[in-house]
Length: 580
Image (cartoon, rainbow, N blue to C red):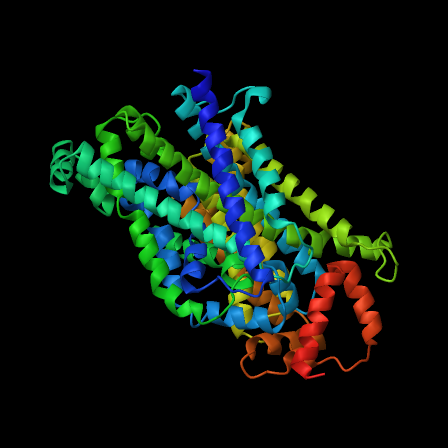
């Protein structure tokens, strides 16, 4: 019994150690000047979109609403088909202006406003908590199910597997991604490990699907006949989803926006990209990856219903356990661990960079607690800030899990984060093509969209978890039915999620447009707008500054922030470029 209890955690540690070795190999290759991030690696790294909310939750929602799991994957497919218009331009802008995060992107576009960067940072930090919470929940319940055959949603703190998972993932991320200060340097090792994890979870999904269809049943025809006999045909119809056509469009929209603007997606798709040409292959290879990933979702869901699996979100793990395929069950656990670890690592590294660059360091500089002119080396302080940020971000996800974890499905966790990140879509997409969009409109739009997200999606999640407010959901505040979170202005034609998507994005866009038309743009606003909108024709856009600085002073300052070794590499590379 003790051996079985220790086996799964030890296996998880061994697997994470293997991932660390893969990342270390990639980083070592990068230091030697070898580029390992080809188009296939880039494509697989984009698969970090499929977290445990997809890995476990896709089957869970299919058991309840059939094809309802599809729209959030149609969005990324459409986004990749439109990548020549959107993602390619984002890459060009990020590389031209040395942008290292989604907060940097928005702050730079709208007049280099630090206030906007702070707002984006806060939205990203709050919005990511549900996504991290579902990763912790999935690993914890998987370990409990493999060890004891039961799931414990909210045990005592000292016995909470999710807490130890959170601390372990935080430590793993610190070792994984904060070994250097330079935020502009790509994490080639991290991308390589994430690509490996994407391959692992795809292989496991196909293996489980094949096991269910061809081992538990005598093939697709047999499973289909049993489903028909059990009256499960509704799972294969549009009506069985309980969604309207508008709901489908809105879910696909938020899936596409989340795929582009989740901090982890921006990190792997834009910041870590080594060659914009990789988008050519990714534009069709990633949709193919998603198709394979989802290929067996419905068959597994049908089998779960026929086998009366008690927890829909854990069907892909429960079925092998119930039929004695323990090796396959362990493989399923490792696939889920891959999905969770990849998400947490990339997301927290991206957010830690945002916290240090857009929140903490500017505050320290403005208050005088940190001086650029000081002789002290702040590089260790920067690393400490990022490491503390990683721990706090993961613990924030754990706190969200403890508060509402037992009351939300995996997909509901995922939708919370997707819609929060989708709020970045209007100011980025409109800002890349409309010169007159300004920072006032962007601030108003983001505040309105985020406020509606909190009111229509986050607040109901806490009410569902038992934090009161049932009357507010049913009748609106003070009995004003028109202000009910699930039916604003009496609009009841959509599902609660579709309703939140519609109102948050609508008010976001309206706030951006009206605020930009009525607000005053400064010269810097107009300059930055032109640099982003006309990025293709402004080859010298990054050379606008005409001041002077001594090389020695520049070298001394850089050494304090990125270290003498990296500084020497940069100056040597520039000397070679200039031929001096």
